[in-house]
Image 1 (tube, rainbow, N blue to C red):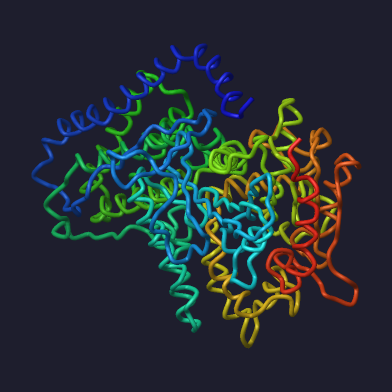
Image 2: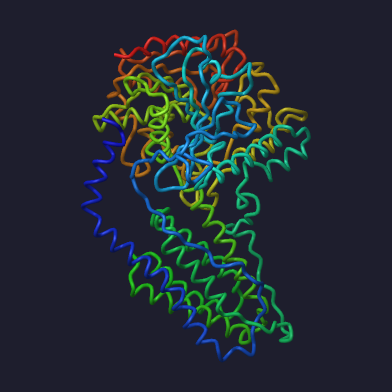
Length: 628
């Protein structure tokens, strides 16, 4: 039975049971959202008509923040392909692939309930290659794209595997490489070409200044919010509001409707929009951050006491489930807050002459932070439950293996995804539809190792994850590269994390550092850090331990480690290997005491990999490529 059939049956039963409730909730939420802002505007405009003779001048705003409804659903993926003509049947591959894509073909597959289009790089076997029965899926590590598997014609694991007869596909999960947001092919192609141009610009940079500029403006920060976000949640960046005794400094236009709109949008975002993305505790943290920022604007003034009273009431409301009664109370409190600020323009001493402008700025900065959290709202389980299954089903449809199975190789997080998939399938008693897998530098449990990834543990604090909603890994490594590759070699230790000494050509190492890394959501890091706690990696709910069911897997596994891998040391790999059925697992460590040595990326792109690692993988997969 196909995955989509299994998921579909579960969804049908669940949908039938909950349809009425979901419809009622959606109707209520939509009614509250559309009604509340208009009610606030009407009430506030009426309230402030008497103040029209003393208004503050504020900038013209482009428009209201949109707060779409985001659904969290386990509905399976859909195989949506693209066409350049709306009247033509959908086609699966892009005809005009970006220059950065060195594969033979570039395909896109969509995922249900989101606007992501996942990029699939395809490498076709040459005519003289051996005939194989199963297509091969390659999965990359955290925050990386397809380039790590295809650095150059002479150092391309993907091209090598295609040359051995495997119909080879590299998946770029959401947020990685050429995977883009877009509703049609034209939009996706434009985004992909833009990403490609920026990646090439970074690769062609030759100076520290160029590196820094590329890191700031390049592909890794293609979202403007990653480069111009001013740190709305950082207490140190808020300066007191300007004060002035001279009443003539007050501007003449107070546009209360715009201020109410801004406040309404923000409070609605906190009470609605965040509810689908953050836990209750995290929502409280975000609300407190915003209120702290507003409070700083009012410090040393008579307004602070009144604000604190309103703050307490609003905080209490934002923590409750939405209802019409709560919506009315939020409306009234928002009105009271704006009323208090209006009266404060002339009643407090010294005068807070630019309070409204500063309040707008504070709310805008906060909304940018909010947008960033929502825009980068995915974790490990999204890859596991949505992205990888979508890619696998798409590849089956394209390659048409007789038994419906794939071969798969995962590097780093890619291997963790494969382990997690086998664990889930074992727990649920269903087939993985994989013929065999290879994991490179991967483990479900890092507690016993000295992995350098333990440096990420501070981000396991939900408050820290909200302060830093994304980690622009690509931009950080791009900026650091000149200091790791040239005197005074301040960050030379970074190179050792990637490649052992003399194991990768300098130009290939440069390309890997500058082009292979992407932005990582803090939510993804938050889940991955559970691999460093007792019990190993867990699902997002913290209840399912993936290593507890990995022994139920029923397919052959080749687990490979590098002797000088500081990110996933051999002892970490062994923690998972010892849980696997002995008759199904093969474990190998590459590297010799006298050299050569293998660090984290040498297993894929090191100069000795083509002679030592690749043949070992081909031999293993070939053994299990037959169709029963």
